[in-house]
Image 1 (cartoon, rainbow, N blue to C red):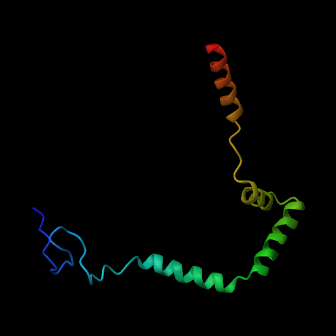
Image 2: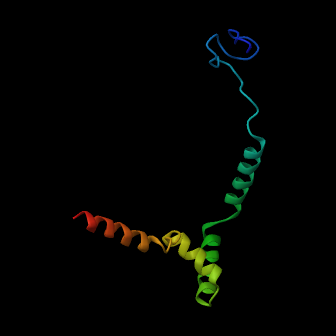
Length: 101
């Protein structure tokens, strides 16, 4: 049987199980805190001109035939490609719709 919450007791909850004023909460997610620090450092280090240079290099490489660069650029610009069977599914739906007429 579960222990009933105590009003403003050691667990920091009231009689209905809600957190009480002054509850310090848990330590948080240390992994998320670490990732946030890394992301902050990255954002401080990488400037808009750096991003522009990377994109220009990817564009040059894509034009030179680097398929990975071309794919990444197109995915970022246009979104991922639609599955090829979409036309087959559309045709099947059109046929079913035509049968009902």
